[in-house]
Image (cartoon, rainbow, N blue to C red; front, side):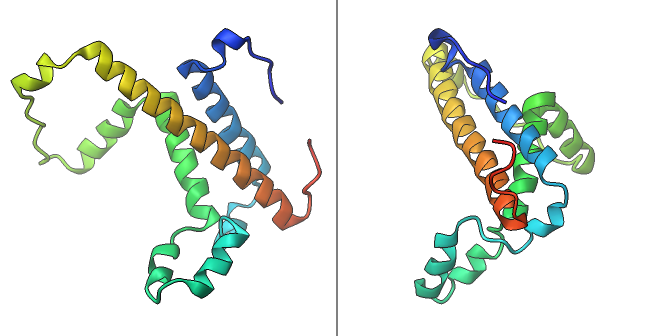
Length: 152
């Protein structure tokens, strides 16, 4: 289900976050048995590259299956929906001896508006890529279980 967006709102951060969350929710509802994603490569091209790559590449590719992306996308969605602070609180409970980062004077001298624009542009790009990954994973799952044309 895709909603039409006015041209002025198409590239807002909020819209990108909503698209990402919607794509991950769709993925989560479509993938009924996540364990079927284990050991399934992200693309068929990756399988062909494994045959021609250097001998140590299998170690890097071992974790690049659809299940790891599924788990990663769900984790990122939770961070976007509930906030990074909540995730950091959980990490602090596990690791209470971690020191707080020291802030220097030069950080406060930076142009905050320029810094914000830089991070917003990067975040928008990352959210667009993650949305695409969630949609691709959903489509690949449908292909794997044989329902590729359903629900479109």
